[in-house]
Length: 364
Ligand code: M6R
Image 1 (cartoon, rainbow, N blue to C red):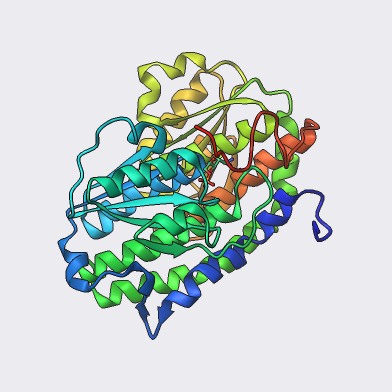
Image 2: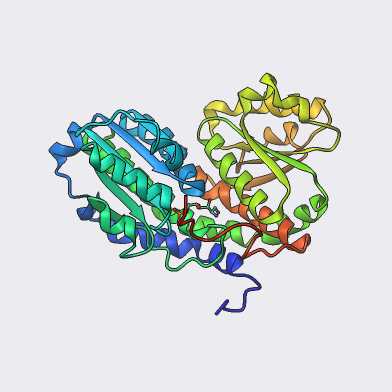
């Protein structure tokens, strides 16, 4: 059932091009984005005043990515919260708030409780869910399914990628209906979206290089991930992937925050993985890379093809193909997943069933 792969996680990583394509294809028709299951008229989309994204773990990282995209592309204020905080903090919601709950399993206890809380307060709840007919899918006002298929490995990969895709479609739909992007911009974005599956496949085929690099860090004690803007969101996911399956301590930081404390943890040889996919922020993040290098860090940079400058600030560089700045997370996550996977394999960890973790967290 692993289809010749050593682990479900590896198999599922390789299913990402399909998960992404299956999630966008049914929703693209004649140059338009059609999300019938959203159940919202263009008028209702224009009336939304706030989006609140609630989820746990990796799904909440999708929420962080979504915040950057929605605010920049659709100019709607977005709040992101982990469900366990949201449900107990008396959030401010009304009938012009859309609460988006994101969940692969559709059974996460805190996320389900957050959904119920949001409904009680009169907000419209949209579920982005992978498991058809799950509790969250049944209880949300509307459900947008991610079509990743069953995910077995505890560490999510293809469901995460499908969730990102769903969020892109949603942001593009909202941005277009609210006149924040032109038809030309919309078609350009659609073209970039359609290119993602093949680009992801190219990155997956680069696994040999990542495996070799990962093997140098099997004994690492700490690994840091840094980024700015949308790259910070992907840092969180890269860090979680690594720690959950390899048991290496890891943290993600907004690069500009390093100086406010964390940089004291950087020692000779500490690996810092730096995400460098936003052209507008290149200079800023590269100066953070220099800062940690001065303190002895070894820096792995993940950047866009053509950014040869990054090689000056990184000791090792991984390139991802050019795409819209909104979509870079879908590409940058691939080397980070592979890196986590090969470190875990190299350390002899139980990749598909890491200690202390369950695929679906149905208790609080
Ligand atoms: O099923 P859900 O998407 O609601 O699960 C949420 C988290 O438990 C999940 O993303 C978890 O963080 C993963 N193990 C991460 O790989």
